[in-house]
Image 1 (tube, rainbow, N blue to C red):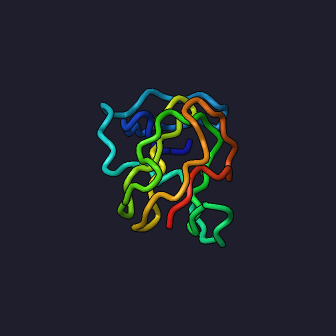
Image 2 (tube, helix red, strand yellow; image 1 turned 120 degrees about the vertical axis):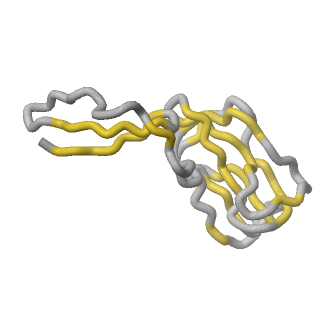
Length: 123
């Protein structure tokens, strides 16, 4: 048997999995996760292209654009949410990798995006 810790919607469960594939019930009541998940975006620096900023904000996973938190021209601090993606029925904030100004928002609410898609840029 192997023991794992699984987090579902912020609740942490300790589970034991037997070699034949059956799963036992949680050993204890769920406990609250200590920290939120890592940001979904993997920003990379790049040369500006036609009105776009020099810092790209890309999707870390495929999903649907749920909400746009920032607007073009808005100043953001490192860690501020620029937009929110719905990934596997979970709202996942995409945050600014550094302080800057939003140069472009390249998606609309409701758009489906693939992993690595350009979502926004910063200056």
